[in-house]
Image (cartoon, rainbow over all chains, first blue to last red; front, side, top):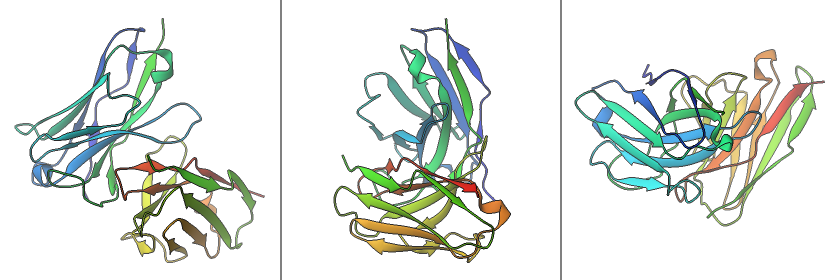
Length: 123
Length: 106
């Protein structure tokens, strides 16, 4: 059973940045891509973007594309999501999920998820 | 962007009932539809992929159908563990989720 392990909860002030990590079993890492999905309190799921662990290609959702950067570190088999210029409406639980493998989009559902990282933005 | 419209937003049912949740895509997504179950405080869990394929380990009382723009998730006989929120997701062009359906105990 594959598990994705995310970093712990964060509390940030408006205007700050947050970087969430997602550790992946090394033997699977470069075979897949990883999406980031967030869920505001009491709300639904919102896809934020995807990164290929194979070559670092990214695709960001339009809503966050100016403030988000997704990266990977193959030496530690870890994916990262950094969100800048935080606002109160960025308060949410952020999930990483295994998704499209390879270097470009391929029809692949999100079959393995991390446990979620709560990010609270408050002054 | 492809929009997903899921209905109903809330569904009240009893153990043993057969329930159906519907999702409509704003354009054809072929069979690239997935369904997820989410319980409070937990990550979503993949139930169905490619519209009708059951993910490994998921009970056979869950089934999915549809193609093009209209899709359904059916639970044939509700069990106590099934009361949760369900989301549809298109993955024809990147990813979009439906708004969710909260399945409550009647």
